[in-house]
Every structure is written in structure tokens, then in C-alpha cells.
Length: 411
Image (cartoon, rainbow, N blue to C red; front, side):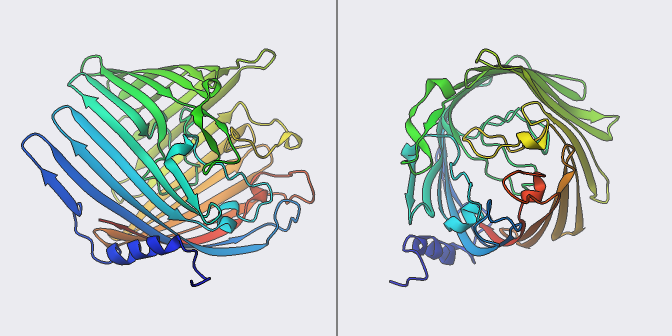
């Protein structure tokens, strides 16, 4: 066997070769009967990534890192009169050195969901995952979905404090497939302009012996039970949110809409009432504005108050399964996108930490090769005080610089 390629990477490479160059504009398999239909679609990607870490041998074991990764996703949708089924199978290969980024304290725990539908090979470099597997019952006024599914209650672009389950980082540009969690969701229409959503998401305890870092038995202490009631009033949607997440009470809401048919406004947040005695309540809130001009230029800005964040750099802490994406209390993000040509779009996002004055700049370019394939080039730059030893002087000063190129195809 060729030692340059892990054996479980061969299946992904064959998948890329078979489908990466000739894709039809629609699903590669579709069937339709009198009262039911089925569709099988696919997505593949291959990327090359390079990282340059800060000069800190305590946090990083390597300065420069590069590698290749590949991923394939098969998507099955079956529907009848009132029932439907959704299944996504994802096969991926990411070298461990890219998963950790060379960080000595990297947390390789994946999305919090049962380990039963995750199989790893090559020392956890290759994963076969059932990312979505759910059934749905629908009527005009009721929709019930049971099984592994993406759950997103956020409305803002960057920080999304109300997205409790596998949120994207603010600098993430490709968000086509949000990871699924094990959940039951019921959406009840309360008239034409109002809706009530009832959501239960299963939680799991960590397990170092499992393939994804979580056990296969639900842990009641980590379950989430949420209710969201929303209503449109004029050009705005208002929503109230209440429930329990990992035994902590959360009460909040969100608003989104357009002011004067020109300025988009989004806001979301909640108050966390800890279950444990002696802990203070925390406020998480993000507010953003946006506008898109006729020439395709879009500008966005958001302010985030992260109540659970640290008030000083000496209180920064890394690691932990429930660790937030952010360390400090207050952040700002500004972003812009522009369509340079009908085939090429560029994006930039800058995130600023007000506590330690560090910043992260993320750049992204997307070129459409065909109707079904695209090439993405991205990179990140960071500024901030460099960490000389064990203490963290700045959050983004500890981030690596990166560049990547990725080919994607849909079929």
C-alpha cells in the first residue's frame, strides 16, 4: 500500500474523480410517483491549507503547517403527502495536524451529538458521519421533525448568541451545511403572521474513547428545552425565547427587519440564569446593521456583549467541551462583500476584541467555475500582543495566520 495516502482516503479520492468533473445541473438521481418523490444529491470538496503559528512553543508544537483535506456528502430527500425523510452522509479526511493546527491544547471534540452515527479511521483523521437523519410530518399548521437535524435560533450574521447548537464562528464564510444535532422540533402556525416553535435537543457527556468525543447515551444534565414565539409586525419579525439549556434557564428574544426599506436591523440575545447556586446571571446580546447597494456592495456591522467572557486577560482560559468561541466580554465585527464580476465575489470580515485590542481579519474570494462548481480562496491575518509564556496577552494575537484554496462541486 502507498504509504503517502491513508487507506481510508482512497474512497474519498475515487469519489472526487468520479463526480468532480461532470455534474448535471440537477440531482444525479430523482424519482417521482403520483404522491411521493425522491432525490439524491451530492457535494464534494478538496482543499489545501497552510498555517503559520505565533512564536510560542508552550502553546504550539510547530511553526508552519500545511496539508490537504477532502470531503464528500451524499444527500437523500424522500417525501410523500405529509411525511418526508432527510439523510446526509458525510465522509471526510483531515490530517490530525490540520485538526489541531499545531496547538498543544487543541480540543478535538466534535459537535455534541451521539457517537452512534460517527465512525472514525486512521487515528481519527477520517470520519464517516450521518450528519442528518430525520423524519418530518407536515400539515398546513403543524410541522414536526424528529432526528438529527440542524437547529439554529440565531438571526444575526456574526456572533449569534441565540444559536446554542454548533454555531459558526464569525469569520466563517461557507455555511451551506450546518451540522445536525439530535433533536425534536415542532413548529406550530398561529395564524398567517405568528409561529410557536418547541425544541428539545439531547445532550451527551464527553468521552475520550468515542469517535467524536461524546458518549452514545443521552445526559439529562446537558439537554436543552426551548420555546420560541415569533410574530411579524409591519416589516419586522419579533420573537421571544425561553427555556433551559444544560440546566441553565435562558430568557431572551430577537428582532429582524428593514428600516425605511434601506437599513437592515438584526438583534438577538438572552439572559442566562445559572442552575448552580452562587453564580451570577450572564447577558449575551448582539446587535447588527446592514445594507446592500444596487451595485452589489454590502456592508455589515455588529456589536457583541458576551456576558460569560473574561473581564481581564489574566482570566482568559482555553479548553473545555462547553467553551465559548470567544474569551472576552465585548467585540465588534465589520464586514463587506462585493461582486467584482458575475463570476467572482469577494468578502472581508474584521473582528475586534475591545479588552485586549487584538483583531482578526478574514478574507474570502469565490469564483464560479460552472453552474455546479466553484473555487474558494481564503485567508486570515491577526494582530495583538504576542504571548511570551503561559499567560495570554491577547486573544487574536494567539491565532495563526492562514491561507487555503478549496474546490467544491455539487451534483
